[in-house]
Amino acid sequence: MTDIAVAPRGERGLAALYRHARYVIGENSVTGFAFALFVLIVLAALFGPQIVPYDPLQSNTTAALKPPNLHHWFGTDQLGRDVFSRVVAATRLDFFIAVASVALVFLMGGLAGVAAGFFGGWTDRIVGRIADTIMAFPLFVLAMGIVAALGNTVQNIVIATAIVNFPLYARIARAEAHVRRDAGFVEAARLSGNSNWRILALQILPNVFPILVVQMSLTMGYAILNAAGLSFIGLGVRPPTPEWGIMVAEGAAFMVSGEWWNAFFPGAALMVAVFCFNLLGDGLRDMVDPRRRT
Amino acid sequence: MLLLILKRLAMAIPSLIGVVIVTFLLTRALPGDPAAYFAGPAATPQAIEQVRVKLGLDRPLLAQFGRYVVDLAHGNLGTSLTTGQPVAAELQSRLPASAELTLLGLLVSVAIAVPLGILAATRPNSLIDHACRIVATLGVSLPVFFTGLILVYVFYYLLGWAPAPLGRLDVFYSPPPQVTGFYLIDSLIAGDLETFMAALKQLILPALTLGIFSLAPIARMTRASMLAVLSSDFVRTARASGLSAYTVIIAYAFRNAMLPVVTTLGMVFSFLLGANVLVEKVFAWPGIGSYAVEALLASDFAPVQGFVLTMAIMYVALNLTIDILYGLIDPRVRLEA
Image (cartoon, rainbow over all chains, first blue to last red; front, side, top):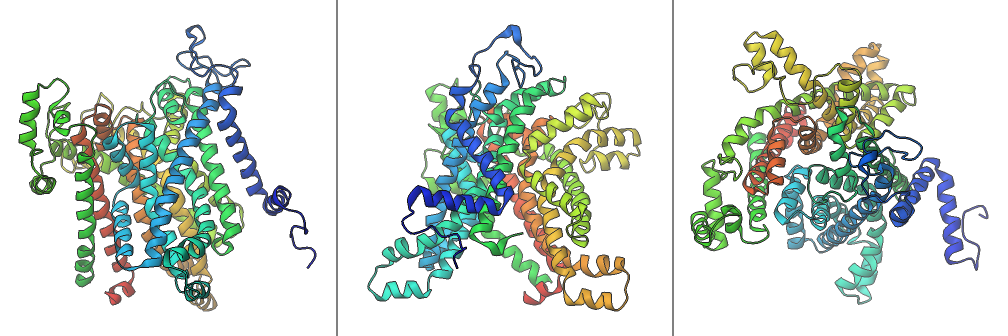
């Protein structure tokens, strides 16, 4: 029994966390790789605008549309702005949109779903009906409609991305809460005099939580794609703000005349980010729920 | 079978009601005064008041909704502010372009994904299995507009094989006489092979872009469901009876494995219809997606609303078709009904 990865007595907090993280990453090298990428993305999101070599908004028309070279690693765009600086600086906004929308849907969908599964009856029917109605739309199209109606801002992109993901979260949370509704530990809590709300908050939610966290990392990729797609068609983010979707849109016109770097690098950054979140999500899922491994 | 269809039709009604309510609420959520909005930026207060009465915006919300439903029943989706044309007519004239592109995209995707999935499942852990996994993971990570642009760069700019990404037909050709609205079919009906080839050339890249995007779920599902079927008892019996590998895989396993794949088509269509908007923007495709995008940028809401409604109704109808198709393929579903 001694070789099981259990933190020795006395070892608490950061040290135990570090040991566990190392154990988990050692298990699966792909997840480790994705995790390293994730750290890189977070660092770029936190410090990107401070560490880039050029001001992402500074134009310099004498050096416009230069292919990648030693001074400008990713080349320069039609206004002579450094593409590398813009791609790195854009990480913050894209990452923020994805995290905010996923956190929002986690709150809305998770709570609604858990309540639906736990209480059943009318709560269940209403949540189910809302989820079905959202699912009746092609998701990106609905997101477009929501942003168009609520107004063309970044905040509304976050809201729209959260709404289109709502059914997914609500359904998973509902199923997980429903299974546990009559479980032994819930019965025990009920018999010892806990109220429904207390059981919901202290018994059901903590059990559903890890599954929803996995879902969060799985939908992060989709959230970024969705947001970038919306800004690609001109919604939400406005130029000259550096953002991957809008940068690809601005570079698109130059693709047909051979200036590929304008659209390629932001698009590639987008792809790498989504790829990283998908890998990470798969890895996390394998850890939390090994049965669903594919 | 008829009972199944009727039952399924009845199930689609709440979805449709939901769709109509949501599209109605979207207009009422517009920031500011919708009457001022629909009257246009240069309208006088009197004109705004006129529009308010004309659109029934001075009446209670429920009455407005009733009016919206009656308008819909008459096929009236409002008028576009920028073009001044009725939205329904414009959507109708642009729909074939989108439909042709989406269907061809699906065809490309199925034509690549299904064989890939089958090959991967019959040779687990082989090179092709790994290829299938990589394609499936990359497929979901690639932003569809990015794939489109890369294809344009490689096949138009570098190789010069594809025509410029500017719509359905090169300017030198005139569209074939309209029968179905699908240029490929119409040009064949007219016996105009040259136009057919020209239209096909324009279609290949956007359709391939859509295909790559929707390939992943189909390939993944085909592989998983083929693996499950191949390990089942009846396949073992078929093999033990000395049937050829081809017969076992195609006639026995494949037919059964197709059922879950048909179900995933519903999700694939949700992706395809959404991705369609982005692909239309990249390839300047004159479909309903680019129509909605143009209207969105001009803050012209009626076309956007009509577009969202059209897409949702098509999606509900597609899901309905898939379910009925499922009943046709799988007799067990019919028995349950």
